[in-house]
Every structure is written in C-alpha cells, then in structure tokens.
Image (tube, rainbow, N blue to C red; front, side, top):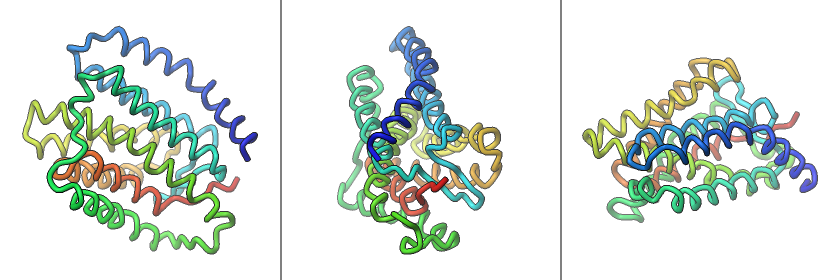
Length: 245
C-alpha cells in the first residue's frame, strides 16, 4: 500500500509542480499590500491542486454528488497531513493574511457542536439517499482513518483560504453577512471548472457546493473557522466512499 501510494503521490506532485511553481512565483512577486490579489492567487493554486486529482484517479465525482476517494489510505492520510503543513507554511509566509483568520468566535464548545451538527445535516441526508452502507463496502473500515485525516486536514486548508482569508478580508469591506454570502458563492464558483469541464456533471455539483459553501460561511460568521472546518470535513466524510477502479 505504501509503495503504491508513494508512486501515486510522486506522479501527482510531478503533474502539478509546474503550475504551482508559477503560482508561487506570482504570489512572491505580488506586494503584501495587495491582499485581495494574494488571496485570489492562493485560491487559484488550491483549485489546481484539487482538480488535478480527478484525471489522475485520486478521487472521482459521480451522479447524485457521490464522492469516491482513492482506496489507498496512505495516500489520503499523506494528502491530509500535507494540507496541515501548508496551513502552517502560510502562517509563516503570509502573516498579514493569517491575521484575518478567526479560528473561534464566541463559546468554542458551542462552536464545535454546531460545526458537527451542520456537517451531519449536510452529509447524513445524502448518505441515506445514496444508500451508502459501510458493511457492504470492501475495506471501508481500514480506509476510513486515512479518509478522516484527508476530510479534516484538506478541508481545513480550504476553509482557511475561503473562510479565513477571503471571508476575513471581505468583513473589512462589507457587512459580515454579505461577506459570508460572497464567500459561499465564491466557494461554489471555484467548483465550476470541476463541475462543467473536468467531470461534466454540471449543476448538481454546483448546487451542492453552493449549499455547503453558504452553510460553512454562516458557521464561520457566527463561530469561526474551526467550526466551519468541522462542518465541511464531517459532511465530506459522511458521503465519501473508497474509489475502487
């Protein structure tokens, strides 16, 4: 599993490296005073990293917003761990953007509870509708820990970018509610290429990501980035299945 996983990760790294190098150079050349531009650069780089996984068979979207991830738990755990490392790197490279991140607002216990509840409200109905039964999926319980690391680690990075940097920046320009709505719509819009070109699944993906994006944005507005991450990660974990080619 590890050897095969390393091959997948090396292939993926080689595939995205040229684009990420250009994004990195663009980010480095952009003055820190241009915060909005630097945020958009990071969002575009993230979209590249996410969407490049589809043609490489690392994850797949199906009808009814079915999400299948690599059956290799090592690959998933590594990607989740690397996402956390990228968050830490961003804290060092872009302290001016990091100051926009509000991890917790109000009572942290309530925030954590709300995050899990919202994630379940998004994920459980879809899991029931799709008829996902863990007992009927070969290797599901072995795969699940790696998937959990990816669900919360990778989505922490996504939430830092959309709800931490973008929504935090917007709150300095408009009301918190309008900032949340813009953040949610931007989140869905950044799935347009995935929905309309990479997978050609169209509006169901955009509708799901719009609902998820708005829900996480509203959780962030009231309780912070950490609860929004828990909502996002829980929803994805509930509807994810191993990708068995």
